[in-house]
Length: 85
Image (tube, rainbow, N blue to C red; front, side):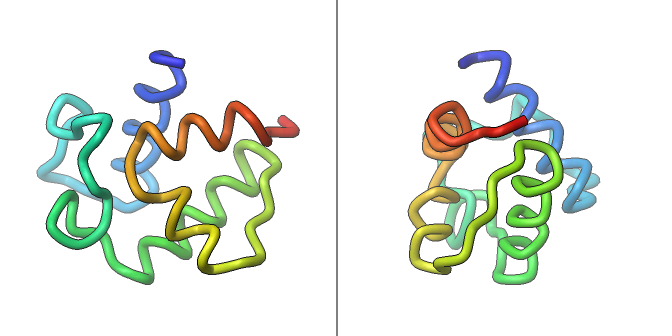
């Protein structure tokens, strides 16, 4: 699971072009949206595309995405349980 968390941090930085952020800046429990990393709804769409492309996970319910993208931990847990790639 730790390897997946590190992979996710790298992908989030790359996909969202977070130039001033490194993987070590992102805590596994920090909120990704709002007060945490400060991502917005456009970033959420990018993350949904990344989940589909990299892990074969299709999200159709926006409310589900809000829970999944709460933190690196919640993303890693969801991917581990639902990935098809």
